[in-house]
Length: 319
Length: 222
Image (cartoon, rainbow over all chains, first blue to last red):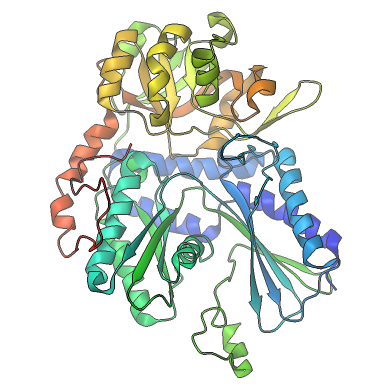
C-alpha cells in the first residue's frame, strides 16, 4: 500500500524540481546547440538561458516566470495500491499543485476561458490535467509533472496517405516557421509529432512525445527513428535559431509517436517543448522508497502494443 | 560569438538615450518599471478608470509581464521568477495607452510589427525592448530590488495586476525597435526568407486545404 502522505510530499517536491531544475538531457542538448551556433544573437540568447538555469538553481526560484500549465502523468504498476484509492490520489495531486503555487512561488496561470476567474492556485475545472497509464507489473506508481507553455508552437492537421512523407515535412516546416519567427515557440525546442490515432489521440501522442521522452531517445521502429533524425536535421537547417534570430538552434530533438488511424487518413500534430522544458518524475514504491529522476520512462512496449493480447512474457523487455 | 554592444540605462530614459540605441543592442535598466497587460489596458482605457498611479509613482517603462509572486493577507509580497508575455496581442490599445501612460519603453516578448512601431511608437518617442530566451525569469527576478506597490489585485487578480518594481541591472533585454521604428525581428526574418524556397523542395502542400492559407513564408502569423 502506498501511503497518501508520501504522494503529497513527493508531488510537492516534483512541482519544485520541474519549475526550478532544467533536466540534464535538455541541458546537454542545448549545450550542443550552443557549440554549433554561429548566429551571434542566437548564441547570446542561449548563453543567457544557460546563466538563467544556474540562477534558478542557486536562488531556488522558478526558471521561467510563465508557469505554463502544470499537469500530471500517473503510471500504475499492475499491483500498485494507493491509500484511499484513485480519488485520494487525484486529491493529493491537486492540493500539491495548489500548495506549490504559493510556496515556490509559481505564477497562477489557470483561469476560466470565458470569465477569466483565477483561483490563484493553478487549479480549476479540468485543471491540472491528470493522465494515466499502466504497466504490466510492479507495486509502484510513477508520478510525472510537466509544466509546458500554453500558447504557441502547437498545430494539428488532417493529412492523407497520398500526402506522404513530403506532406509531413511540409506541415512540420510550416509549424516550425510560423511559431519560430520572433521565437514565439521559445525554441530551441523538443519537437513532438503525433502521427495517426483519432484526432484527440493524435494530439496526445505528439504532446507526450515532446514532453515525456528525453533528448536523444529514439522510437523503437528503426524507420520511425530515422524519420526523427531526418526531421531534426531539417528543422535545424531552416536558418532560424533562438528567438527567430538567424542561426541553427531550432530543434533540440524530434520525437515521433505513431498510433493506428482511420484507413483513409494520416492525421498529424506538432508540439514544441520550450527552453524551459519543465518535467520531473518520481517512483513511489509500496515499501515507501521514493526515487526521483528526470526521465519519465512513459512510453513502453506495453503502451505501444499493436496485437490484441499482451503476452506477459514480453514484460521483461518492456521494463 | 562576436560581442554585442551593451548599454545600461538609468530610468526614466531620455529621448536622447533612446535615440542612440541600435537594433540588437543589449540593454540593462536601473530604476522604476511597472507591469501592465490586457486586463490593465481594458480597465484603464475601455472602462475609463485611467492609470492606477501617478507617472512618477509608476515610471514610464511598461513591462508585459505577470510575475510569479504571492501577496500575503498583510499586503507583503514575495517574488520568484518574472518573464514577459507576447506583446502583439496588445496593439489595439497602444494609441490610447501611450497618451494615457506617457511610457517611452515597452518590454515584452516577440515585439510588434514595424508598421505598428511607425504608427504608434515613433510619434510617442517610444522604443521596444524584447526579453531574452524567452524565459530568463530567474535572471530578471534577481534584478528586482523591491516591489514598490501592487495595484488592482482585487479587481484583476494577481496575474493581471499592476506590479511596480524598483530594479537594478534589470535584464538582459535586446533592442527590438529603434527610434525610427525599425524591427530587429523583421530584419532577421528577411535573412531567413531567402532560403525558404530551397528548404521546401521535396515537400508537398496538403491535399485538404484550409481557408485563409498562404504559401508565402515571408508572412508572419502575428
